[in-house]
Image (cartoon, rainbow, N blue to C red):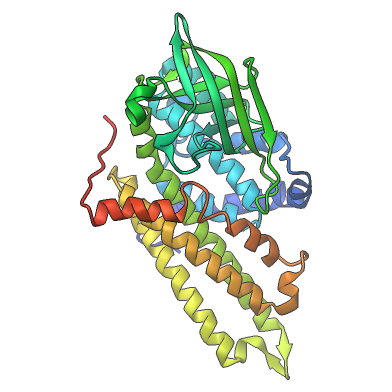
Length: 388
């Protein structure tokens, strides 16, 4: 069925993606959840199908499709019930690769973006630090220019794909005395001397590798600078719109998955001689939750439409992440309750969904940070503008 956002071509893509995920990914999810490592073969299969190149230029092997194909990819990834696998995919495609495409020169794109689209290289984005978390401007990692290279020192944490990626897109202070106006972005090969990574043991997102990374006198060639020196903060802020909107889409999609599962369960499960779906208290609670999900979903679609047209939607994308991730947590909590004791059993999807969803209000900027950003924009009338 087509609507104002999705054409018949979109719907055909969704069906193809669903078939691919069911055949190639779902049979391996439980294994990857237990091992905490996604096998490399699946990255290549994603690349062969063109899923990594959806939004990227045809000149580098991409498909140059509109943003609603990305929305579909994120929605369907949430419905295989592995937040960790979904995170590994979108962290590669919409964090690391975004900077390569936007700020990388031609040589950089040929060396890193092209094999990223084919699935031959995996990337990660390194911004958060042990001492700062969501405080991007307060980062301590430095990259000081020394003759024909930069010397990178510091550490990053909570980095998705941080242990197994082939390259790292790293933010660091190149002119520390300028604060956030002295920040730059680099692409760094994993096998460069001085890089070490330690995997973190997480409550959820078990399939993805999340790491703390240390940089000890890492030499970065001058040509590995992305964009212009000391303009990295603007690049990061500009790309936050896409990251936050993606996390909002992820949230409404996993909430919708939880509601669909709970509705089916409540229809089949009987108590006191009738299906759970016939009990008024449960029915009314369900429709309240469904309405909350649908409101976030339609808002997210509207913002995706504007972003696809090139509008600067940092405020709206921040709202998307803030409200959608809170909604998803509440919906999944209540859906687990609908299942009663079975909701607490690992053989059913709600336990994993609950763990995975809890990272939504934390990752990519905590809800507390997002509220302060919105306060500055809405109350203080602070204006943020696109990087030039």
